[in-house]
Length: 308
Image (cartoon, rainbow, N blue to C red; front, side):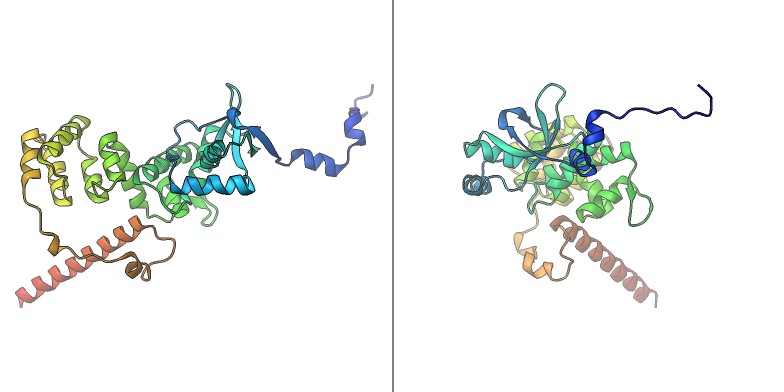
């Protein structure tokens, strides 16, 4: 055969007689009815699936209309499928007595699956601090593997900046949430049930694990939880290496400021001053930042007046 002669490869029978439309259709994602028993929870899934009032509503909806939005899953090497998005629908389908549910199956690597799993859940109206903390951490780690970029800005971003843009949180607030993952489970549970506020919890996350365990004992002994100023002092003692159980009890034993000194603003009052995509945590962080700026201005003014 001469060098300049072209080599021809015969197409298969299916390729010859298939249409472009059928070939395109074969590439499209399809919704499959998959047995519930073949669907497994995503490894490290940070969002809690609770049999609460909202679950009861979802169960009733599925009984009446079925699952309207298909879940997303990926093939599990050990068999079946790993749910990426749709854990609550899967649980509700079980409670509704269903045997299968509609699922879109995608071939996803770990990083892509984590990002989809986190983003699909961050849109929920209510999230526990622990859920948001571990979700942000998982997404940060996944984006670090991929390299975080912003199509809008056309440039590489810090992963925490991208997470903040996607979730409506500031970069600093994303970092503060991720810091909560340093808390031992017992303390983080107390943050979820609002026995410990977010800001004190952030400060307590800097205590060593052993110190956090000792703090739990001190809190039980004194029947008290740390205020923000107390948590900041505990953090300072920890950094100085002198955060002993005795010091913890002494701080917790102190009388806190009276409740009458607190000023409470309702959500409806605050919401009208902030964009709709601002989370409660971001609103709180913004207010604190503005108050700190005002405090600095007052201090500077006082110093100028004293210098006259």
